[in-house]
Image 1: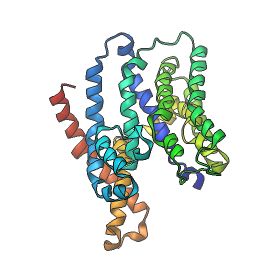
Image 2 (image 1 turned 90 degrees about the horizontal axis):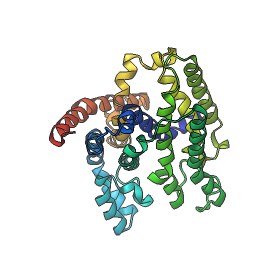
Image 3 (image 1 turned 60 degrees about the horizontal axis):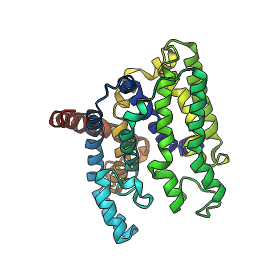
Length: 328
């Protein structure tokens, strides 16, 4: 299990692909009919994205001193200026400024801008031709990683999740290299429309996706990090999503109320977990409460609880208020 747990970073690629799928699932029909109000869509995405994003930055203000020490004056002030604007991801050196997971929102915001045009693509004429196009996008998604492996511009013998290099930073944290995953997700929503919800194929695809993902991740360092970090896993993610979007025992299992309840806070948990983890452990609160013997499990429970609080006390109220003000 250790290699699987160590590859948790791959869930970011799943999140990007899934966001493309979910948006297309909900908006593509309107976009194809020319009825999607682009400005209203962008406002809606902003109200959904920004409240927790801003909270994550406010909680990370204590990291400013460390960021100042780690960067040149120019890069530091660029980070200060661009991070609240969701633009830090375009400069690899400051992509993870203040709150490491926040780079994903920089990428997502750029994909949201492009989405109305991506979603307006016509429905595919045939199942086979659409699969071929998706395979092409998958191959494009692996190009950045393959180029990194071929040229090894950072000179790192065996790069992994702990390695650092300017080119590896660009590969991991910028919108350029993850765009194919989002486009693949949009195309997957079109494929989803071609498969009946109750089709038994969905169950088998879902099970095969989970098994294949587990098997690949179990191989650990045998799979090049530069490939598995993003593009390589797209087909397996697609199988999982198609399985969970159907009517079968697998989707019923993941549709259990406790899982759905916690799942609603997944965005809060993702954006806040890094900073909250550091705050919990830097404050030694678990030592004071004599709970450190239960770590890391007690920390996981605390993080989920705080994410749920952020969802109901910050994200949802702020989203409602912003939508009133902005007419989203």
